[in-house]
Image (cartoon, rainbow, N blue to C red; front, side, top):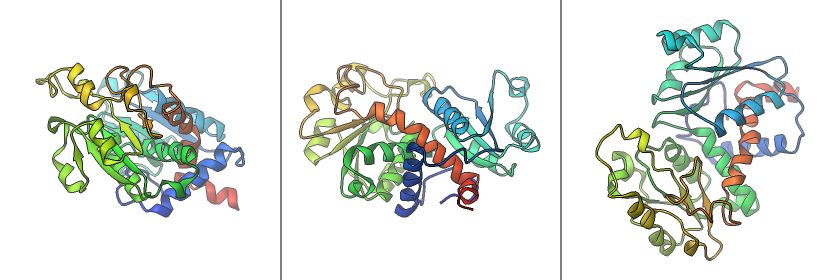
Length: 307
C-alpha cells in the first residue's frame, strides 16, 4: 500500500486497507520482532497530542527504532526556523521516517517534497488524519468479527465535521471498506464539500438511529479552531441534545466511537464513554498495532523482514 509517504486516505482501496489491518494484527500478536532495527523515526509534533504522540512513540520503540522527539517549544521553529528548513535538517541527520503533526493543512505534503524520509501525516490542521481512520477500522473490525464483517454496516458520523481532519480521513476509508455512511451535523458545522461526498445529511442522532445506524462515530466540538468567531451552535446544551449520544440511544446493539479527546456530556454522556457499547478504549489500544504497521510499511521494513 505504501511506497514512501503516508499523507491521505483519499483514493485508498479495500485491499490496501486489508493489508494494513492484517499487518497490524501481526504486530498485535507479536509475530514481528523489531522490524525497524537500525532505523531512525523522528516524531515532530508541532500541535498538542496525547494518544497519537504516545502510540507512535511506543510503536516505533517496540519495533526497534531509534526515536527522536521534537516539538515547537524545544526546536528552532520557536526561533523562527521554517518547517522546510526543519525537515531538511532532519533529513540530513538520517531520519528514515518523519511523523509530523502540524496545525496547517497540507504541512505533511509540503514536508514530503523536501526529504527522502517516509513522511507520515499524524494530523494536519483541518486536513487529514489517516492513521486515526485506520485504527478506527481495526478497532471496529475487532468488535464485529473481522475486516470482512465491516461491509454493509451503517455508520453515522456525527458532530463538528467542518473542523475535523478525522472526518476527512474516516469518510474515504470507511467507504472503501464497504460501509454505508451518513453525516449528522448542524448546517453551521458542515464544510462546503459535504454535498460532494454523496451521503445523507441527518439532523440528529435520533435521526441516525431511524436511518438504521449500526455505529455512531462522534466528533469533538472544536471550539479552538473557531478562532473567536461567533458561536456555530446556539449553546453546548442544545448541541448535546441533538448531536450527542446518551444512554437512551444504546439500543439494538449500537456501537459508539470517538477519536478523542472526549468532551463528556457534550458528544457522549459521561456514563456512556466506558460502557460496553463504547469502542473508545479499543480505539486507543489499536493505536500501537496500527501505527507499528504503518511505520513498517512506510519504511519498507516489511520487505526486509520477508527477506
